Amino acid sequence: MTTGQRFERAVEIMHRLRAPGGCPWDREQTFDSIKKHTVEETYEVLEAIENRDWDELPGELGDLLLQVLFYAEMAEEQGHFSIDNVLETLSNKLVRRHPHVFGDVEAETSREVLKNWEAIKTQEKAQKAAASGEPVSVRPKPLLESVSSAMPALLEGLKLSKKAAQVGFDWPSIEGLFDKLHEEAAELRQEVDRIPEPGPQAAGRGLAGARGGSISPELHSRLQDEVGDLLFTVVNLARYLEVDPESALRQTNRKFRRRFGHVELRLREEGKELADASLEEMEKHWQNAKRSE
Image (cartoon, rainbow, N blue to C red):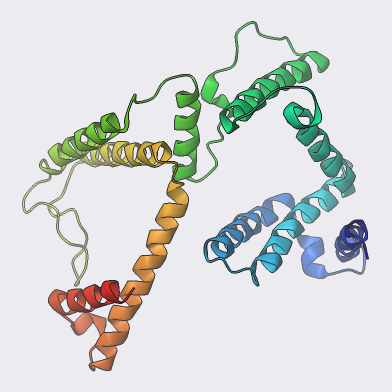
């Protein structure tokens, strides 16, 4: 069976599931009900990649492809477009935006490729507006308008800063970023010092939260603003180092899960539960987990 035949079989299975007499669950789904599954499947693909789980990845990619087939099938039922339109649009876009491969444009570096890509996108949008009869503005659209605000905040921040950096709005060196990091941390510290006595308290061991005394909505808003500034600076630092902040944080989350799981296991071997252990006992097992990695 060829690749094309396998793809056509998957399309036909999806059509059968949605057809009269098909699967009740599949037939009930809508664009809105499937969205959350698309997000979940995307993250499961990312997890398999980060774990280098090559046995699991084909299945996860298949689940993600299923989302595409689902949307295309529902769109065809409503007379909007079909999977053929999706494939044709994709193929044409890949050829059109890679003139250095399929044409006679020169692009020796990734930076040149990305610059060409953005220029072609801008040209395509202008042509689309002209074809639809929309007035073509002599002013270009705001640079950051193309960055979706619906994506995860870390990814949005990364894309926003990348866009700005492409036109030269960037730190000349990484030292400037570290200076900015210290500046933002100091500004956050100033707002934290305004929290009424007894100040921030550890959230845990039955305590209500980390705020300590009651704080005003205005102070809470400023704290949130300063934490956001600090996180955005860290995202820029990651961009400067060509590190994906989303993947970096996910990796650290997994590391925390692993080490904390070790702490919990060792405590139970000693006949203790987490709630009964002291911070010193937990820290001892945490350090042992670190050394064993």
